[in-house]
Length: 100
Image (cartoon, rainbow, N blue to C red; front, top):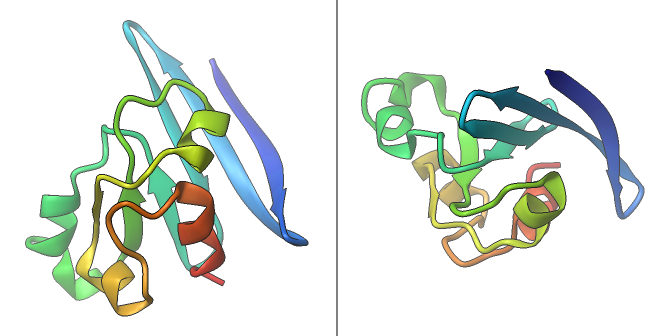
């Protein structure tokens, strides 16, 4: 099952997507500039093989809901995210607000 819902943070709207798969759930919250995602995100791949795309993204691990993803500290971020002031340890919500 796939669900999408708007998430409003400080007056800005983001899109939350939950994809329920066998034995796992994929979670992402995004806007036009970037996204945060659950542990399924391969930040290393984005930073190396897809570096030319300049993807702004962060990954939180151990999260099972969108609410947890927003509150959890980021475990890793892309190089492009770092250039926006997004860093490891920042909450997903804080990171999204830097993607405006």
